[in-house]
Image (cartoon, rainbow, N blue to C red; front, side, top):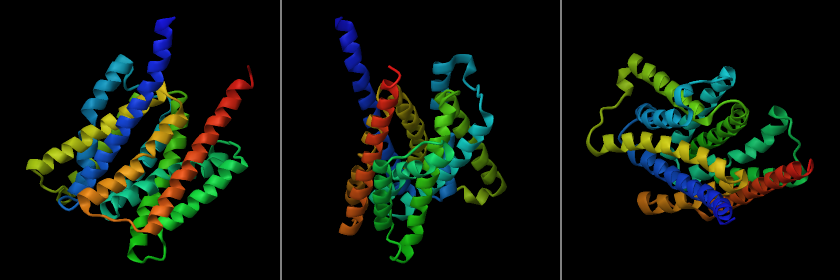
Length: 303
């Protein structure tokens, strides 16, 4: 009896711990992207990010799946995962490099709003009044944060919105992949494909790969290692905690990014942008809560 109680307590706690670690890793990832932005171009950043994520992901996939660590059953869906994942990471890197850290993070985390919009079309899900209200509020928050009337900044804000939309499409694709393929194998294929594609770009246009050394080289290698650890932590967190818990913890990254941007890069968001961020976080939490309620009702109904 005692062991079963301790196990039931430890699993949710482990899920929370992994979620929080993933948030911190995501924060460090953004800091490294911002820190190296003045010294190297986007192609160099992507090349090191993909390349040095491979070793840890390969070890993890071998540990989880053994000799079947490369087996994929849904190859067409995997191709979509690679496309949306690649476009998402490019837009996210561009937004962080050109926008205040907290603002870029808020836009990227608004992906759940676009998931709710796309779900009826791509998954056939029914969306109720609560979630549609949260979507409308969230889109207003995105509008406030991007501030389309601000001139040059609105162009960079478009990177953040595109990152969120790519992330939303990616979430839907990952739901489909999760029904028949192991996340560890999917992550390995995605990052391996990214390494090959960016490597081919560098091979054909070697001038795009900036020379690096010293602390800059260490930062770029660390970016790849942390990127792989981030994927492992989030994937594992969903195995121990409800999706709504993991999703809710993720939004801690928004205020933490704002604080990091202020302390490390002297970035300051104005009050209008802060209000927009609060609206985005609130709407995302409402959507996550309604998803939890809907899943619980679906589970209880057959019983």
